[in-house]
Amino acid sequence: MPLLTVLTAALVFGAGCARSARDVSGERIVDDALGVPVHLPGTIERVVTLAPGVTEIVAAAGGVTRLVGVSTADDFPETVRTLPRVSALPVNFEAVAALDPDVVFAAVQVNDVRDRSVFDELGIPTFYLPSRTLDEVFSSVLQVGELLRTQTVAEDTVAALTARTASLRDRTRDMTRPRVLFLISIDQLHSFGPESYVQDLITIAGGESITADLNVEVPILDDEFVLAHRPDIIAGTFNRPFGKEYILALHPTWGTLPAIRNNRICTVDGDLILRAGPRNVLGAEKLFKCFHPSPER
Image 1 (cartoon, rainbow, N blue to C red):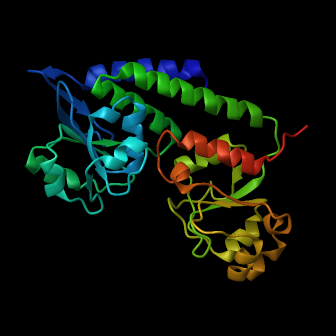
Image 2: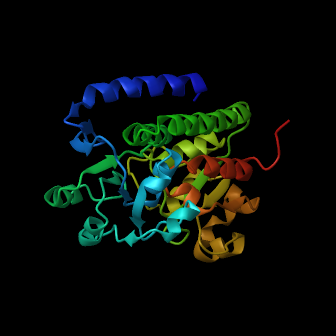
Image 3: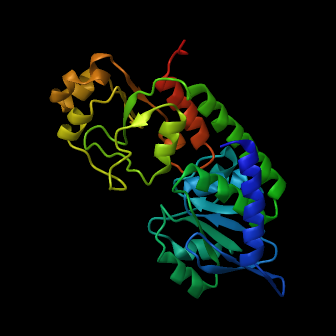
C-alpha cells in the first residue's frame, strides 16, 4: 500500500474518530472494532493487554510505558517481560482488576468478546481491536495512538511499516509466484482460510496461497487436498526441526509434490506470523526469502 494511501487513511481515521468520540466531562466515548461505544478517560495512563499481538500494537503506537500488565504469553518487546502477567484464556478478572487499568485492550480474533460483560461489572473499559487483515493491524496502531495521544509515534511506525510492505510488493510484482502451502502444524495440517492476515503476508511476500479460496477460517486439510493443489513450497511455523524425510514419514503420499521433489520447505518464527501485530511485516520479509531465495533475472 503506497505511503500516500496510509497517510490518507490516517486522516480518514481521524475524521471517523471525531465522529464516534466525544468529550463528556473529560471522558471520551469511542466505538471499538465490535461497534460498541466504550467510555474511556480523557487521559489513559494504565493499560492491560490480553494478547501478545495487542501488546506489540500498543508498544508500536508509543504506549509501552503505559503498560501495567500483559498476558502470560507475552515476551515482546523485551521490557514487557518484567511486567505483571495475567491469564487471558480464560481471563483472570481478579488479577486484571488488581492492576487498576484505565483500559483493557483485547483482540477480536483472539479474546472472548463475552469477557466485556464481566469487565463492565468491574467498571473497567474494554476495547477490542481488529486484526483480520494487515491493513487492520496498521489501523489498530493508528487507533491506539489516537486513544493514548501518541499519534506521532503511531503514524511514524505505520509509515515505516507501509514503506517496507510497499518495497516487497515492488520486488515481487514481476516475479513468478510459487504455489504455497502454509501450515501451523505438519501432523494435523492446520492452515489459514481467506479471512486471515496470513494470506496478506503470503501475497506480499510473492507467493500464491493454495488455501486462499477456502470458505473456512482455520481449515484442517487432508492429503487429498494437498495432492490436488500440488504446492511448490511448504512453509510453516513448526516448533521443531523438520524436513523432507520427516514430512514423508507423516504423509508418505506427498513424494510427488513439487515442494517435496525440489526440497522447497521452510519455517518462520511463529511469533512473526501467528501474532497479529507490527512484526508481521518482518514475517512477510522472512517468507519472501523462503519463496524467492535468489532474485529472478
